[in-house]
Length: 476
Image (tube, rainbow, N blue to C red; front, side):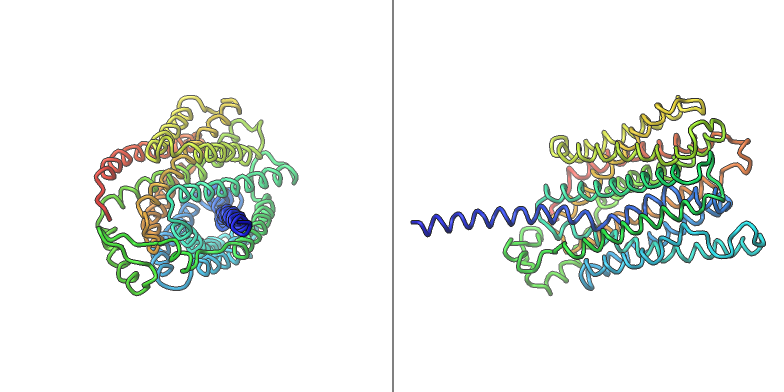
């Protein structure tokens, strides 16, 4: 009897340790995308500002640089998805991408050799775009490898839809935390260094310092991820009875050859589903709203400083900081409430919050508007973007269901369009910008109103079609 009791206690203790280990693994999983998130915050929020205000690139050329990055990312995404499912492990792909990002990202915010104001303008006109374009190409390839391999780990970690939702929320919380670090570091650097009312060519060292600091944080995070995170082994999959559903029959994953054959037919089947493209649109419009907000909030604030310079240049860091604090808070709230309201209702709520923020900018945020109003709008932008992004990724995870072995391919398809759409949108916006500031003194205010507001409206329209299709989704 004593032996049985001792055995029972041992089993309970083992279960508790195993459960705690999985909780730790879920948290460690969030470390894997921190470097990407740090880079994304700098890329979207400060790249255009750095190119235009510090390097004094023309707006169209700066927009073309961002478009190039998005196009390379879009082309690399499906290729990485297919290759990651077929060759090697997702952790090895993740490590490869992280190394590429480490070698290229810090240089994007360092003034290139021969790009100073004293150099011949004719040489700078071709050398500067060529230099940064080559860096952007390699950086975006590495970024895409990390993004897809990390996303595709979610279905591999667990078959439980609730845990998948938790992992998606943890991933986004890590993203928000990373962005908070970027804006906090930028705010500290702008305040601690030589203070200036406007951002100009003499501020290049500030962007260099910020990029080096966040690169150090990113390198430490992905090293910890690779040391501590353990993927499920084939033994774990077999013990959990992991199966691939095929209509009314089931195929055991232990038969790897059968899985490869089933994977090919499943991907073709997914490509024929309208629901896949409708789900992609949800993600595209949520990402478009998020990306345009990150790109144009700092430019809008710099534009506003030309009329009302009383707040100083650190406003380009403090307002995005408030935006991401709001985003972090609503991500935590969504993590505990998403099962009560559902992914689709959460997306609808987030879209309406996004739309309200755009209307507020249009109606009340003029150059004389108070800082308090700007912070309140930033809070709404953060809430809307976080809710729509997390819920759209949860909808994608539900679409994949138990088909974890083709998760990278599906995620690459879903994320493909947002890269191109964002880049094309930025180039179009910059192309229509007036050459003289006096000709359109509130241009970026209009961008935040109509471009971001249009993204929210299109997201609501896509949601209505996706909801109707998903209710009639066949068994796959």
